[in-house]
Length: 150
Image 1 (cartoon, rainbow, N blue to C red):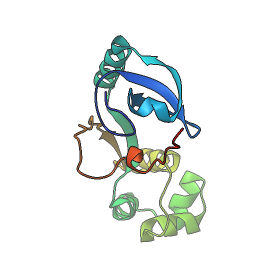
Image 2 (spheres, helix red, strand yellow):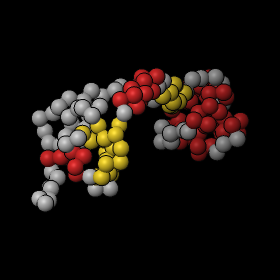
Image 3 (cartoon, rainbow, N blue to C red):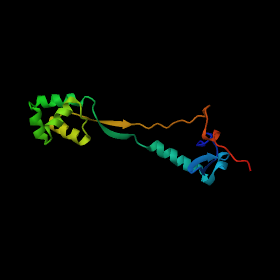
Image 4 (cartoon, one colour):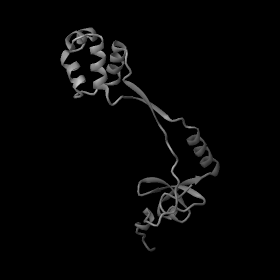
């Protein structure tokens, strides 16, 4: 685990610095009030939880939804007015969808999928990768803190 202020590793402490609770090293802990030590087994538990996390899955609407809706409606031989009545929606909504001026929500997309027999929703998995912290040659918060001489 790395210090939130200077980026060094070693024994870490939870400290309140300028109203923020940070994980800091022994050297940076003098800039705030120490709340307690961070135990190594707690760090390992956090790393294990992150490793066990499953990718986040969400439903998204396909990019070419307007064209698919129009083609699906035409294949059924329905006018926009008839299709709107079938879905219990306004004709103007169907027109907006087919022209691409209105992006449907997931509920409406499911309704359209069922009525037209097409696929409008894709499952998207967001993968979270652990960031590797390396000592950068830039500045850290600790470089900007002014200390009072006692």
